Length: 305
Image (cartoon, rainbow, N blue to C red; front, side, top):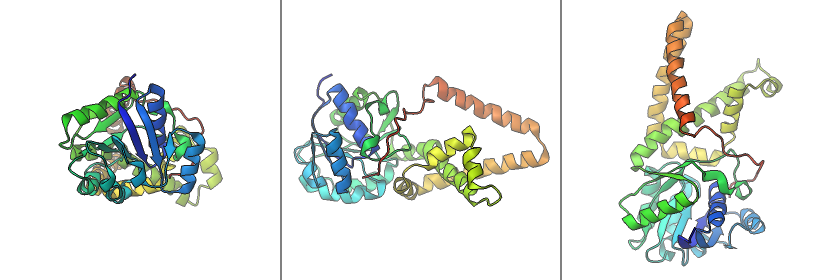
């Protein structure tokens, strides 16, 4: 595989950025990888691990001479980072991000970028419950979807970024920002909110002790706790940034839940059976699409940058 970008700047060095660095190194896709993070602790860990060629102290310093800049910070911090790096971006550079919300990121970032750069927002649909620079690994994106938002950017710049993600093992889909946010509210954001809520219910239910919750957790509840272990800063920002779509899907979910509640109360077994049969078919579709395997868990831990 040949080099696609001569110098890549990673702003934020958590799970996604560190995995991108490992994946780019695996396939020889970047001539040089420069990293930075908000905290000195994160920067020191990144230097120790060595997945970047250089780790610098500021975002402004990191982007100098970079032909690809990746914003891998919480959604709520995107605008401030864009304002910091804007004056230091070289002509023709591509700026992308890995945030879980797209319309709000475009609104926050685009005004701070000069006309001579290409802004192609992105979102890799891959992750684990771990965070921080120690959590990254090269295979995270293998056979996982990454969504790119062309956003009116130069076609050549968009295709070059698509080539990078594909070379890192990802499947790539193009989508507009508003549709992305609605789709992700269904497939990711609202399910996370439900998981947080269910774990909170278990914590608040005084008639079930903490030790019983831990000792007798069945597979379904273990999945909830895995999801609810995700980074709280990131998910706070996601829900605030994608408020409208999340509230719409949450309203639809509440209506479905009330219908199921009525079926249980009235003993309508046929309605329950039909509903579960329909949803089972969706699960089979996920398996057939090869999207049912969790990313490997190598026991990595660490704090977000």
